[in-house]
Image 1: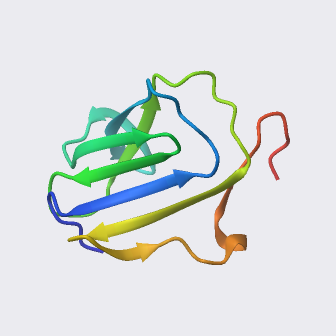
Image 2: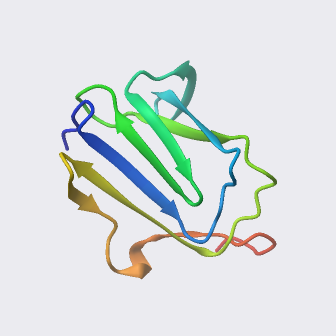
Image 3: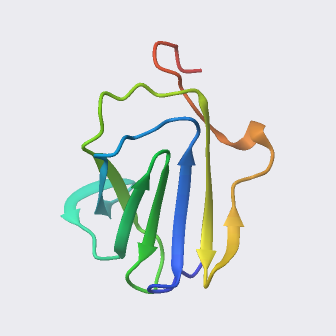
Length: 114
């Protein structure tokens, strides 16, 4: 999927999790399937709002980067699903599968993953 400088956004909502008002995000280049230690220039804006993280593309291309949140209080993951959208020129072009069974589940703090 093509992403366009200043016109493409990717947003993810992390269920009922709230990252707090001091949350910051950093964007790193990819090193295979994991983040590198080099900041990426593919994203111009990375915004955190409660449980939602939105990145705006700085360059036209693909989403080959990793987002890391910092400055959040102790992380107590709340139960819920991670949902997301890809938006090009104000139109949603890709979204999370509507079938909740196919969505990524967050593990609630104090419970076993499974």
